[in-house]
Image (tube, rainbow, N blue to C red; front, side, top):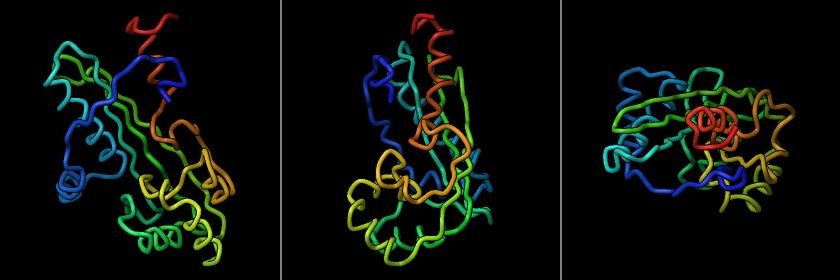
Length: 184
């Protein structure tokens, strides 16, 4: 998204053990919104500590079901089918957080929430969808890529498609303009 928007950047892995961090944050009782924010901040701070002169953007997304349960990325095709069955004919929330760090401290943050309405999905549809999409969608929380065939899962989406794809892009661009990184 940043590349398409004309923003120069270098992608660097922060080396965060997300599963262990999520387990710890869940044990602390963090809600989905706060977990997305905390994970984005951890990623940004970890890289910012390595290069204090850089402006570092950390991001994370969390899916929250109506009952408050959170979904992680599916670890297997079978788990992906379970996730899709849990989402079928229901709405859920997707939180996408962005945190900018500089000099080893967070200097800006934004968390967006999108309400996702999944249509009723038959087992046949789920099997066909995973036959076509598993290799790409396995890396996506919620097992969907709305920029591809995953759009067929939904009857309605309330909020920014950029947020669904994984980054609240417009607020990030606004911040970068405010900082003078991008021209106004």
